[in-house]
Length: 53
Image 1: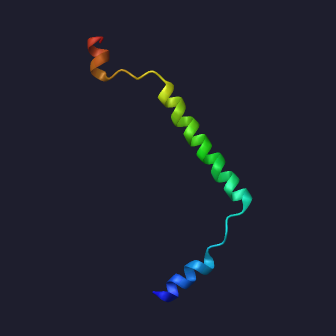
Image 2: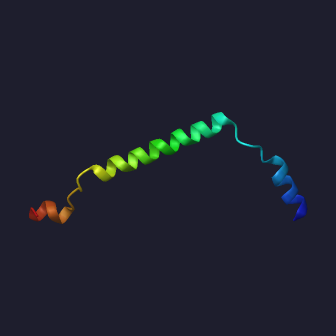
Image 3: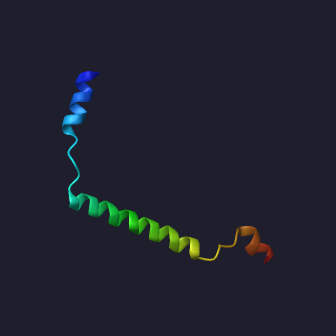
């Protein structure tokens, strides 16, 4: 167990600024996508389309 823990801490390198920037950009795109979907009017269900409600 201690050997594995030592290997994990040795192999974890700090993230480079470029890696962090890429991650932030990806998260921003995800949040913007979610926000745009929330702003869309709700789609009608099958029953609403069939019965016109």
